[in-house]
Each structure stands twice: as structure tokens, then as C-alpha cells.
Length: 229
Length: 229
DNA sequence: CTCTTTATGAGATATTTGTCTCACTAGGAA
DNA sequence: TTCCTAGTGAGACAAATATCTCATAAAGAG
Image (tube, rainbow over all chains, first blue to last red; front, side, top):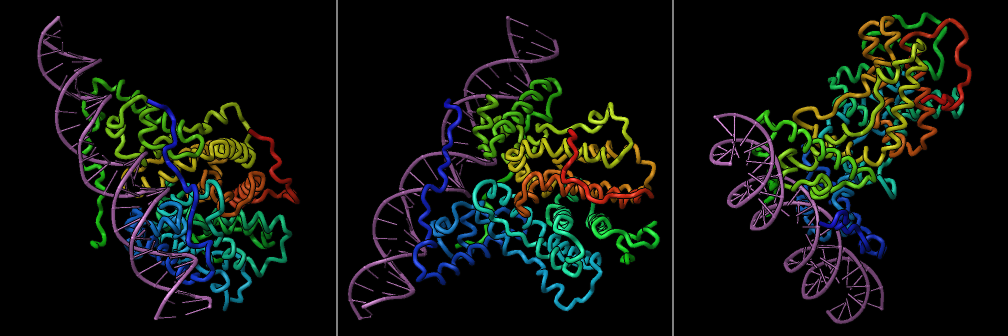
């Protein structure tokens, strides 16, 4: 009868074991890590695990899981840090190349691989992240930014702040898991097409940011040919 | 003790009132529409409604709601069709402009507006869509494609199929709600910056696709200048 | 080792999800 | 009008979510 009540009582007072004593910080850290790892493992197949499953896999009780995370959604969202992601500096540690477009393609290819390889888990995590970071603290950490910046490093000085920001921002739309969602769910094209489109887009953005070399401008590029400069 | 059970029993046999008689098709259509509209309305504030709330708002029983949709997730996902979206052909019906970049900016501005205006609801719907279309039939309809193609119409003949496909694909990464998610959750930049980056990206992609005209080209564009929409 | 503090586990409870059964009610044809 | 059928509502039920309480185990200090 009564129209709109909110019978859900969300985290009125967390008595998390976290913010109490620095004494048992190690234990605390390990328990938390185990929960996140268990959640990440259970999401591998794209199945959204129940909190009970996660707690069981982490060998703790349900109550303990709720002491560490306000609800299941947050737990699953934070588990996204447990997905492997290419490390920017590491990826280019032994790479002295100054061809920015090639470096960006390399970075994108690395991110593309782990994204598609972990697609089911990423979908579940992304769904939780959408609802969780609606309000409050940012849960999502920006890993693609450091990847892009590492690729862009050799040419950083060639752009002013505004142009650099625009390029990074636009590349962020190309690089992340969100692009995979668009290619799969909206456009319904396969992985190869996605890679081709992304490579072309990277080329276009780099050309616009740094200016086209004076030579003959592209006539017909092969799907992912590294012809530039 | 037992490790991995799947206690969730999902739609083993739908006895939906849909696929039976064409006689009461109108009644059926209206009930379904009411449920979707109720769901969309309840998501306006970003709150994920319970199925009971949706059923109550649609003035039907829970059982009936489950007869139309296998679960809450699908109901919320399909409610996304109830969000206003700019109609490509209508947007350019009285627009004879052949400036493709300006047309794309206009289309993007229109989509940008409804996307940001309905952000909370879109987040909830997007979260459901991520989990729902994992397997099975595509729930998501591609509305941005027709918008992009309407904007691109005057120049359609100038590009071969491959180049056209690349441009449309890349623009799809710029246009949708996913871009908003990246700007807000990952990059954490405000709406104005998002508009600026998207405008720049559109310019870059158009340049790459059609080639820079011989005349003097962009020196410094104003951020998010166009008052379009 | 003992004591205190603090995390934990084991319930109990309320709400929600999804399925199922059964009674009823309204639409359409005779 | 009278049937017959299909959609509906109400309720039962198992499972999951989220919160709370209380007893117990374990870590660290003395």
C-alpha cells in the first residue's frame, strides 16, 4: 500500500576493523586482500558471486566480509584492482623509441589484450563500479592515464598543456574497457575490427595533436600499418 | 563446506503471456510499457529500484512483473529505451549544412545534453545492461549510430566503406554515455572539459577521414565554443 | 604467562529476489 | 448470455542481502 519507502538500511555506522588500531594492521591488510582476491577469482567466469561465496572462498565469515566492505557491490567494485593491467613505465622501460604513434599502439595493444582476456570479470566489476561511485569517494583508480602518459613521454615537451590534456582525454576514450563495451554491445563488431578502428583513431588523434608531417598524407592505410613518420 | 554451488535458479521456463495469444496483444503491450516506464521513472534519482517498487508503481503484482521479464536486471536494462535520445533524421531535417564537423558537433551536443541530464538513471541502466547482454540476445539498441550517420550523410559519398566504418566506429567511442563515465569516473573532469575534449576529438577524426582542406587550418580553437543544440 | 583489546564467527532478524501454486477474473467466441 | 481460455493477484517458499548482538579466539603489552 504505502508508496515509496526505502527499506534498505545502508551502512549507518561502520565498525570496520580498519580505522581502529595500527597494531594489527598486517592481519587487517591480509584479510582485506584475501577478500578482494577471492572476489576477483570468482568473477573470472562472468558470474556475479554472492557475498557468501566470496566470504567462503576467502575463508572468513559473512559478518567479517561486511566489516570490511559496506556491501557486496563495493567489494566487487574494489576487486577491480586485482585485474592485471600493463604498467606504463615498465612497458617502455627498455624502449627508446620516440615514435609516439607506435608507442601508443603498443600501449593500447597491451591494454586491449588484458581487457579482452578478462572480459567477463571486467563486465561484472564495471557494473558494480557504475553504481558504487555514483556518490562518495572515488573507487576507480586511473591506470590508463599513466599508460598513455608513458607512451606520450618522448613528445611531452612538444605540446602545451591544453593540447596535451585534449590528447590524453581523447585517448582515454579509446583505451579503456569502456571501448570494448561499445564495440561489443553497441556496434557488435569483433575484436579485429575494434583493433583496426582504435589504431586508426590513435593515428588520427596523433596527427591532429602533433600536425601531419609535410610529406604525402595518407592515402590508404592498411588495417594497422605502422607507416607513419 | 561445499565450495561452489549455484543456488540461483534462473528462468527455467518462462510462461510469459507474450508468446501465446495475439488476441490480448494490446493489453499485453500496455502492461509491458507501464512496467518499463515505471522502472525508468524510479531510476531518475540514481536509485536502483526493487522489483516490488517497480511493480507497485506500474500497478501490477510482483508475479506479473516476473511474467514479463525474467528478472529485475533485464527489466531495468530494457527500460533504457524509455530515455529520451535525439533522433538523427529529425535533428537534421531542416538542416542543409554540408559542414560535416559542425553537424557532428551539433549531434554530439544534443546527445551530450540528454546524457548528462539523465546521468543517474543512465548509470543504473548501464550497470544492468553490462550484466544482461553478457550472453543471449542483444538488448541494447544502437541509437548513436543513426545519429552519427545522419550527421555524416552529406559526405557519405566521399568515403569508401572501410574509411566510413572506421570513422563511425571511432565516433561511437566519443558519442555515447560511456564517454561520460570515462570523463567522470576515470578522468574526473567536469562537463565543460568533456565537451572540449570531445569537440577536439571530433575535429581530429574528421580531419583524418576527409583530409585537411588546403586552406589555413586550425590554429587555436576555443574550448567548447559552439552554442549548438 | 596473564590481561586487555580487538577481530572474528555464529547466529537472529528484516528485506529482497526469483519461482511456484492456486484461485479469480476478464476477453473473446459460441 | 454462457463458456473457455489466458492473464492476473495473492501468497508460500528457498535463497541472498544487510544489520545487529553476543560469545569466543587471538594478538600484543605488561
